Image 1 (cartoon, rainbow, N blue to C red):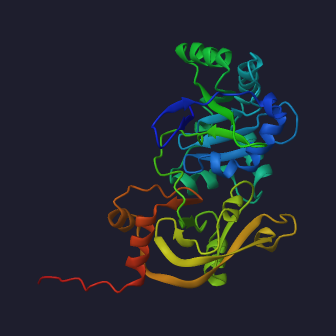
Image 2 (image 1 turned 135 degrees about the vertical axis):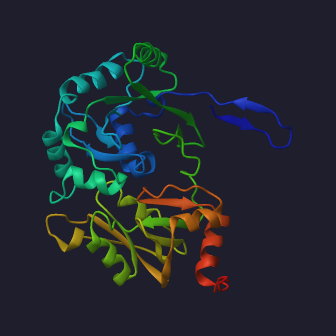
Length: 339
């Protein structure tokens, strides 16, 4: 729901939800817009992206694996008021729900660095060791739908009551100023994260150490913030000049900090010609290493927030960012020990 509020009188008026056609758009156009913003909508702290498709073939728009090995199948075409919304994603379940680990591994390698297996990437992200038979034991179906599309939402409710894990991903569109469309849509979440949308000039960026120590070392030696492959590389594109970036090594803590210079650099991933422009990076000015590293527990104590450090990059509120920066840059009082 979007309310228009008169701050002087306190009067409110509910804005009318519209359909895509009102703006000359169809589901393909919206899908393209969403793919370009996928790094903001997809929860990489909860799901490992298996594949994404931009080709118009009979395959899911997105597939992902969670910590327990459940396969999430996404239908993002956003058709409005058509029963085929739900039928399409269930059709994908029929086609892909029986895939074993070897087939999932092939999909994963086609979408990312083929030198890394799905099991290795899953273990690095979630810090659990799943046997191959645990992958894709269960499926979760996610279908995007307009808030006005009551037919699809009723169907989702019906199938959920029968035990099928189908979840709606609801969006709504509104008219803004002339020639502007407002899109109301929350990032998809397995569980709620109240800190996911904070962006006030302070960020924690994972150095990708568990997937590739080479990436981690390159960030530190080159004094840069970097992310790799579509869509996670686009997170670097969101950084603005002057933003403070804390480089976080998984299992260790914040190992360096610097100020983004605002200039995006696109490079082949690890210098390999077969992965052109798969590294997005930004130089960090006033760069300094943090020794000893600031651990996850210390970060939580300083900020009072139970942050989850599995995302590629996430924002901090101003107070938390300043508190961490102060702790890093100012000498700490010596610890008093007793005999």
